[in-house]
Amino acid sequence: MTIILNGEERAIEARLLSLALIELGYQDVVVATAVNGCFVPASMRSSTVLSDGDRIEVLAPMQGG
Image 1 (cartoon, helix red, strand yellow):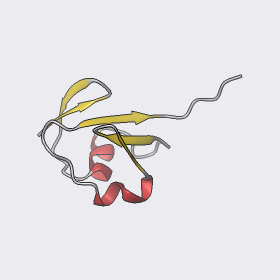
Image 2: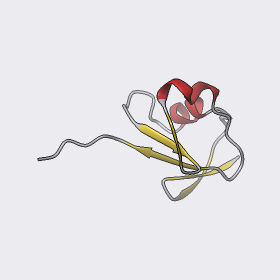
Image 3: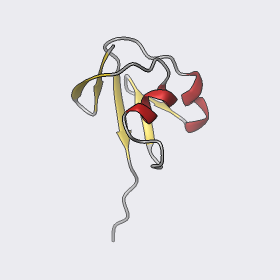
């Protein structure tokens, strides 16, 4: 299936957001996620089903000053 990850087209096998994050290399990273512009809390990722063409945003928190 093809998704858009942070504006870049990617091919993935996973159909659940939690598994897609692992497939995309985010398994050990604290991130915020959104699918098609809607925030998805970490507790909902394992039940969030992805579809071909979905837009996924993954943001890692940054420290600044």
